[in-house]
Length: 103
Image (cartoon, rainbow, N blue to C red; front, side, top):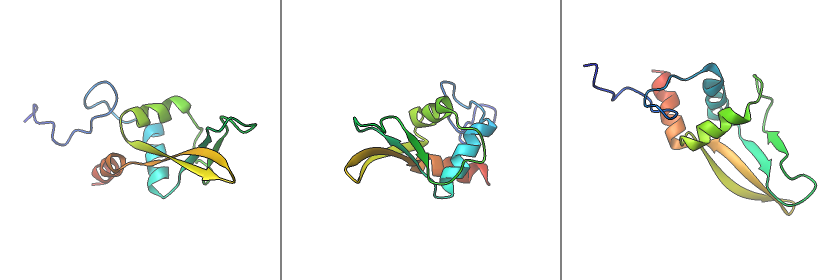
């Protein structure tokens, strides 16, 4: 049924927007247990971004924002040596989307 969108992954502003290789790359990388740490403390490291392992593709802040906006990535605040970091990880929605893509 062309109107049945139960198998469609909602992404972006338009329902059923297709994934691009960068989006899939980020989600696969995060699904492998990786995370992104961003310094949010007012200090000399403010805004620095650290990846738990090297990215196999070029980083793109806009792609990360879109994945976060659409609920595929979630964030948590963590403290390390008195510095506050926002840590981005794969959300349950992101994990479900990746499992669906791998079916």
